[in-house]
Length: 393
Image 1: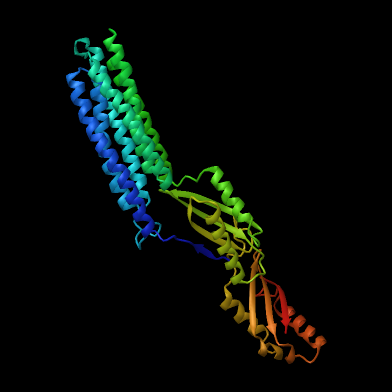
Image 2: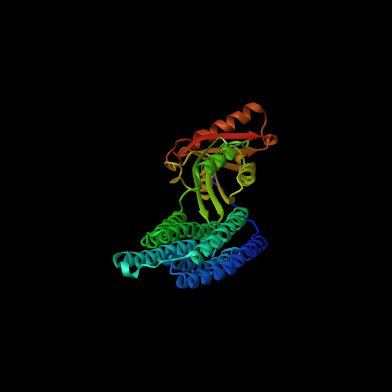
């Protein structure tokens, strides 16, 4: 008995709330990025700090990534449709990869310019107190934005917002490096400002690579965290009626966790009971593992992880036709009310429901059962039938 269950949460309202929350935090960050970026570049130019100019470019790059975040969150939070039955969460994933690649590109540009200045000392800049003050303001403001954005990201379970939060923190950390570089240059180490710019570039590149790699893992359907998989396994095993489980597979789509699992149940139970067990398994996973939003449960009467021994057996119509043909001259079979087939271990077990009223006595009933079994069990043409049980009522 195999049966699949799939669950989809209503996403329209939830998606709108996610987008509104993400838009608010991102727009606040965008205003700060714009003001800081312009201030850093102007002061860096006037105050002769290459590291501060590089940091200003980094801040302005946040504006582009903020735009990516807004677009991705708007479209990624749309509910599932006919063309995208699992939703649009992967839009966030693609946007996060783009954001990571953009950071790497920015870092390369900053590092290249700094290296050129180190190779030509006459191009080195000599920053002053003004650059130092602006860098300090940047540290405080960007660290505040980082904590605010990360709080919203964790609340929404959004890897994209989390990536943008770290983009903000990278700006704060790069401003710390700028402070070190400016202080060094003011102390007579003219090259330290350019070295600080390279330090900023390396840090930005590392963050970009980390974000891109993490999201790339999602695109190739990497499993959920081992701790979450263990929770899922425990939730399944806690359901009454589940004898075992196999082929447990998990993956992520944006902030959603998707689960597929095969559960083993008693092969003699009804389809409806198996369905009820499957529904309970699905509900239990969703209740105990918050990250999971979609579950597919396949119900098995036997372990088919390695092989499906019953795959080559004929289906019901053919089997029943042969049974009725073999039993055509047994008068009691005219009263058959139901035939149940159990496909187990590459063989078929047959159950027949007959009214006891059509039998003369118990001995006659037993004789009918023996004759029905002898005519089909392991006989040519029905060698796949290994058991016939007659249930009288």
